[in-house]
Image 1 (tube, one colour):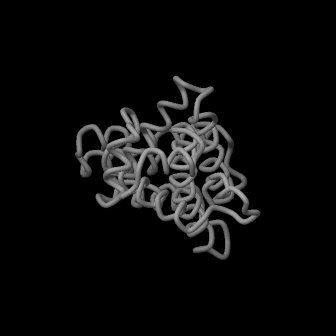
Image 2: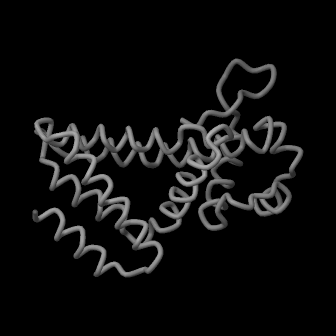
Length: 190
């Protein structure tokens, strides 16, 4: 669940309005990115006001943290679905192929662009709202890859993860699904 502040005078989690605006802001950020996020156009696009967003999320950084948590929730849900699809560890190659299919799907391009942007920002602005985003995603994916084939070396899992991420960045830059998929298959065949 996204980490957002509770509504004042409430011991419960985020309000329905806060969740609704977070989902709308997330959809907006998937198509517009986060690099030049400005509260006024965002608020207008999602049917709110900058003041309401600041009240609900404390600050622009608080909103960005909530958006990153929301994106990470999508990623973690994918990992859970893949893990639950097998009674026994399926092997690193099987999981890598499943991950590539999911990552490369055209309907996920906006989410993947968002992910690349957030990943890069967390490397160059590690003390802002992006704190630990890149590291957390590395840990999440490596954990899944380890569960898929526990006897495989950490070096091999890291290499598979690096290959998938490199192929994804290449795909996003060029749109060449056939070439990047062929590269993934070639690497996994080794």
